[in-house]
Length: 335
Image (cartoon, rainbow, N blue to C red; front, side, top):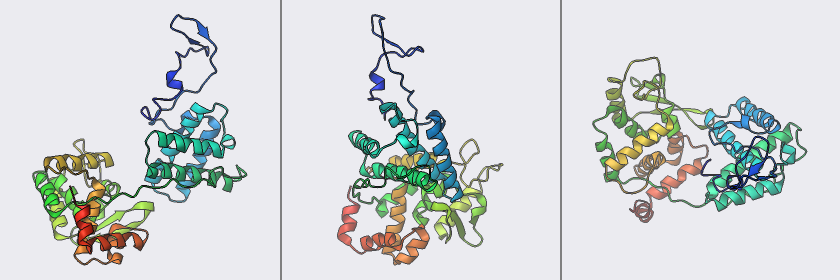
């Protein structure tokens, strides 16, 4: 958020005194309309106006009641807190949801565009704002939603990045000396698991005797998948040296606690550099790599949907079409 608001009007004002005045370099006091302190990104909604906070707390509680995943709740809370921060910095008359207008939201989206935020990011933030006001209307706290008629920002069409066979073999070879990291990479490549799903795995989710793994996916949906021999062997090797402790997460850090999503992302990035892979890729690229090669080897869309936890089967068709089109395969794997 520091980068997010570093060019704001508040940052350019003079020194703020406790008596609500500001001073020039010469020390003369100038009248200054009281403005609220900027929120930092890591601060929660407690720092917003109490009425905005109360409404946000109610909204987040409603998500919990609907069994929405923690990841989604945190994302909504972050996006809405950032929106409230912008509101309070740019219009001091806003102190409750009823004061938020359609124009405020449009201006906020325009501000994000000026800051270089992608259409995907702006669409996500608008989706959070819509859900928030939809809740307030449903609870009869507002007569209508100011976000209901705002069109979604156009999302950029991004090519799916995945690794060629020689690239992912280099990646695995780079991690061969670390059983934990090698197991993490094998799980990504053999199962197409999401990074948040992998970080959330606990010991009881793995059944090596049956060759199965329970995954707690998006929207609190669970799926059980079979483990291939390479993934099973990698997990057995890691579990034989895994530190024993209270924490039941499958993958532990040096402190003996579960790896975070950021930790896993850093691990993948580290071995990408060690392997000399110059293209920009991520944990999600390894998921794409798995899906693409599974489709190439005969996996049908329904099989991919069950493996990857896609909500809609249409999403899985992308990989089937890509695997059957050598020209697209060449384009997507270009360096």
